[in-house]
Structures are given as structure tokens and as C-alpha cells.
Length: 313
Image (cartoon, rainbow, N blue to C red; front, top):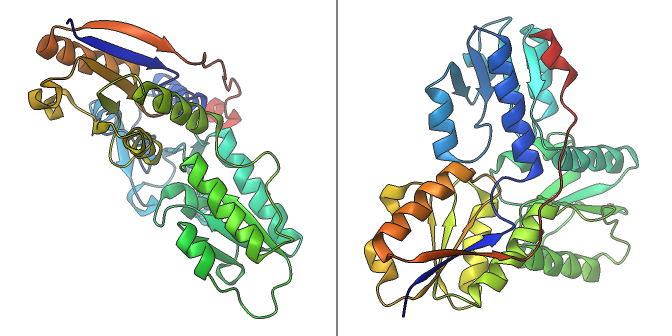
């Protein structure tokens, strides 16, 4: 029996990631100066390494950025404190934040203005959550990571109004369970309009679940730093199929494909097409398999608006 490599769609770059990459590329084209990026522009090691070969320097603190420089902010969103510091240093700031993350920031501000205590469901230390929670005083917010946190969390005495927000890249079903648990505990819980899990997170998870039902092993193209990529690997394994997260062809191991005739491939929302193609070629070389597409849904979302600050470069 000939081996098949099944490439699922939707996969790879989402609209927010594509927009952030387009912003950085435009910034590079408009100047001969060093361009700084606070935090990784997207959570993909290969993309970061490729930009480092150009005139891009990635930093975690604006202390590393000289006064008056150009700095692009990552797709994950940024705390207001960073913008204040950038203004003091007279930096040209170009924000690459995903519009869907901006939506959560605006929800956080609105809840705060309306006197709500905010429960944020997300991964501790993730850049997106740091940015959103930066909109709210620490004493008026609480981060929880899972259903256990929802059951055990304790709010400050006197809190009457409670709202919930979520990281955009969570496991869709688990996030719903956490919110249901919070609703049991706080019946008047204020929910975000339309939910916060982004379309790409939800769509790629649904696609990998269907892919996993047709294959014997799943390869997810993405980095360990990428929350949405790790969720794809987990969703595949929930279907009883071994899944591997890789961001370089060097990580591929021949033994993964021994005795396997149906091999599935997907990519996280920060996995570029060129990296997927390299990994597909490696799998073809190892397995001598043929590639076929499994289209669950076409990915048609685009964010065409770009920051006005690009004109200042």
C-alpha cells in the first residue's frame, strides 16, 4: 500500500499573523536603519531567525532600544506601560497587534470602566495575557489557566460584578468548559460579545480533529512558544493519534513513520508556508508518499488595515 501525506486546510498563517509580517516587511522596505521588534513578531523560531539575518533586532525590553529608533510591536499585543515608555524615548512605534487581540484589550478597558472585576482565562506568562491584563489594575483582575482554577479561584471581598475574557489561542472546548464552570459560580458573569477565541484557532482545531480521524500520525508545523500550535498537537492526540510538533526539518525522525501509511500534516497560525513545504519534502523523501489535500474549510479572512505610523518611517 502506498503511503499518503494528507495536508489539511485550514492551516498555517492566520490573518493576524499575515498582517504582522506584512507590517514588518513594509517597515524594512521603508528604511535603511535598524528595525527593532519588541518580543518575537510571531511565535515561530524559523521566522525570527530569518528576520535576524536582515536588519531586525528582537528585544524583550525597550531599554535595549536607542532613543528615536523604529520599533515594531508583536502580533500578541502590548501593555499600555510599554507605549508610555516608548513615548518617553521618542520611538517610532508601529503596532503589529492582531485586530482580534485588540478586541480583547478594548473589552478589558470597557469592563474596567464599568466597574467589573475581570477573570482572564489564559496561559500564565504568555505575551497576549500580559498585554491584556496590563489594561487592568492588578487588584481588579485574576488569571486562571484551567477548570481547576475556575473551581478554586477566590475573588476579593465585596466584588459584585464579574466579567470574563480569554486568550485567543486556547483549546476551544476547554475554554467553553472553564466559562461554564465560572457561570455556575458567578451566575451574572459578563461574557465577551462573540467570544474571544479567534476564528483561526477554532477553525484549525476543528480541522486537525477531522484530520486525525483519517491518519495514523500527525505532524504539526509550529514552535513550542506557539500556544495555538501546541493546542493543535493536543487536539490530534485527544483523538488517539500520536502527534509531533516540529519547527525544523532537523527535528523529523524516520521512526515516526515506520508502519504508518496515512500521515497528516497541519501548521499552527504562525507556521509559514515555506516551512510547511520544506517539512513536506522531507516527509516525502523518507516515506516516498504522495501528497493529497484535505480541505475542511477555505480560510478567507484578511485584515487589510495597516498602522498609520508606517508613514512616519
